[in-house]
Image (tube, rainbow, N blue to C red; front, top):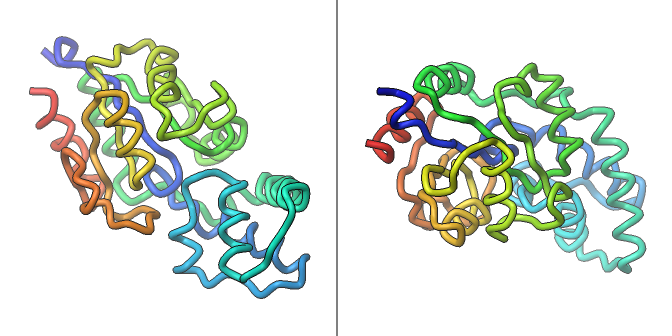
Length: 225
């Protein structure tokens, strides 16, 4: 019965699977400090996460009213990535209830995958350090296929790499890029209310909305039966 209803459940990473904000913001502030700029306040910076490293740096500079050339932003992004890679799991932790939810979904026969705007090698390093990588049939990032969410190609290709079918897939995410990629790919989306977004996820009308990972299996079941 479980296998007949098996789906591919595709997760965003930052703000959905793992609370990565402390380490991402520390890395951004490390870069800003080197430029002699004030640090970003935590809550404001938390809403800037989700569109990749370069966009986080751009948003951080804009928040400080600092203009930078394309070359400078590239240099700062490289500095950010180098620092972040060495501190990727200092304070980042899976959201409460995640591992139990993943156990439940796997027991029902669902395939699990990650589709993120984080670079693939950084995503793998983070999930490796947290002991989560083996749970996912595919881990795909912004550099895996040369496109980022909300371009539907990244979701389609992630599902294919995981060995699933787009027609039986569900996206799980915390922000507009996740809702957008799901809508463009024609799959349902579950929004999580504890992630990083400047627009409340409820305002983006996901098909289901959860506020704790314990509620994820029931939300998936409601979309697959």
